[in-house]
Length: 325
Image 1 (tube, helix red, strand yellow):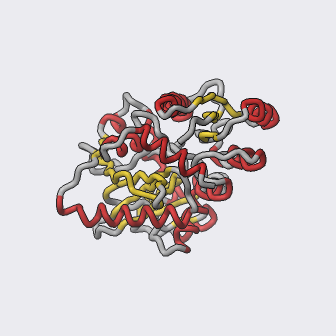
Image 2: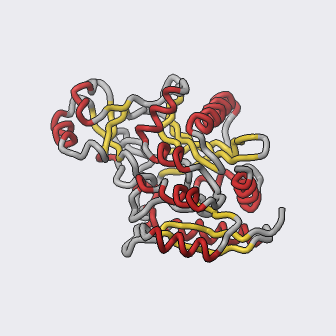
Image 3: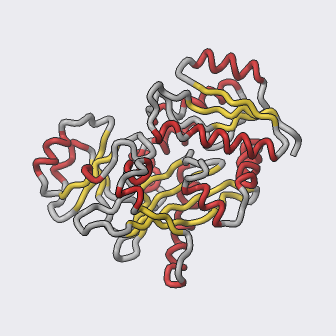
């Protein structure tokens, strides 16, 4: 591959950025290092909602390609599609998922609709004006419709269907910002996917294990488990990528479903699919992340290492995929 001028585009951080937002700079440094190893020249550019300023900077830099690491604007995940939309308008090739599927996959509820249409099993979802349909014997979880990284999501969002006090409080929230989903008791997995010349490929499947969680404590990968390094949840939530023979069929099944999700959601470049598997070994797709975190301490990076690959290999594949379109 010839040497390219690559702009690494990332969301401009807010003034008091929390760990989940600031983490994008770790991703920028990783991609910058990989591009250098591949012989490309890179330029780092923060993008804000001042799109005219971003447009002028991009036109001045004249990139052959943009490596899109924009995760949000002003920490609002629903605006993530703006970056690829701008690049489409400027006719600049970019990595990752295109504008429309990026918008759709950023919405947990739109994603569930697309997956259901493709015959992929998802957890039952309810809008806030449908909470009278909650079943007393089931457990549910309140979720933000748009945000990634489990922003605003922890165990206090989990409730029983007969908890009318909680239901009453939830009804007062914004319908456009939140919805409710059945909480699937069981094991949690995710699979990392990358685009190749032959099509999307599973990098690795990982399980998130919950160590010494009290029986009454919901086993979930919430904000604390991802970002609060001093918390019980962070210290006792452990990723594993090696499985016994008895899990072989399940791991293959999760990979196959992950590839179906890729196609159903129109993804590109790289992605991660999150699952819960119930006590009957039935997988449910929870989320499809079209621009997952790839920092060196992320699950995606761990999957790459487990697969015996260098992250430079992944960046090369992502760049090649972007240049095909």
